[in-house]
Amino acid sequence: MLMPKKVKHRKQFKGRMSGPAAGGTNLNFGDFGLQAVECGWLSSRQIESGRRAMTRYIKRGGNIWIRAFPDKPITRKPAETRMGKGKGNVEFWVAVVKPGRIMFEVGGGLPEDVAHEALRLAQYKFSIKTKIVGRYDQTGGVG
Image (cartoon, rainbow, N blue to C red; front, top):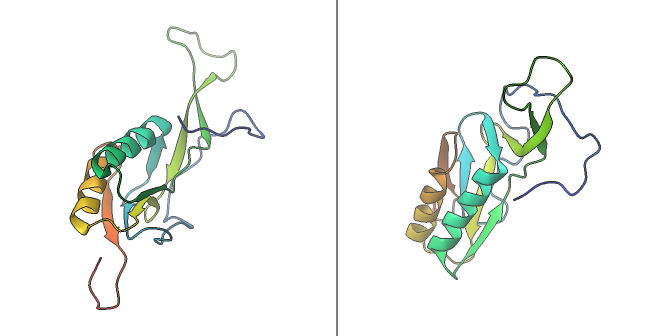
C-alpha cells in the first residue's frame, strides 16, 4: 500500500473538496491518462487495485505512471465506542482528487486500444467518475 514514510502531523482535518484541481491536469509522462471528473477520495487500496489491473492487462509492454499519492490520514473510532475521548486512530490513507486531476498515465509505445482497455479496467476500481484522455499528436487527432 502507498503511504507517506513520515508526516509532520499524525492526524488531519477532513477539509473541503470544491473547485477544480490546482495542478496535475496535463499529461506529462505518457500518451493516455485517466482524468477525474468529480471530487473524491481515492484510498491507497483503490490506487493499488487500479495499478494491478492495468499492469496485468499491459503485461510486459509500456509504462504506467501513478500521479495520485495518498498523503491524507483518515481516522476511525472503534465500533460501539461512546462519544468523546478524542479523535480515533488512523485507519487508512487517501489521495484528495478534484476535477481535472490526472491520476494515472500510460505510454511507452503502447497501442491505443491496449492503453484504452487498461485504463478502462482501472476506472472500475475507483469510487469517482473518470474519463480517458489522450495527448494530441501533430496531425490534429487524439493519440
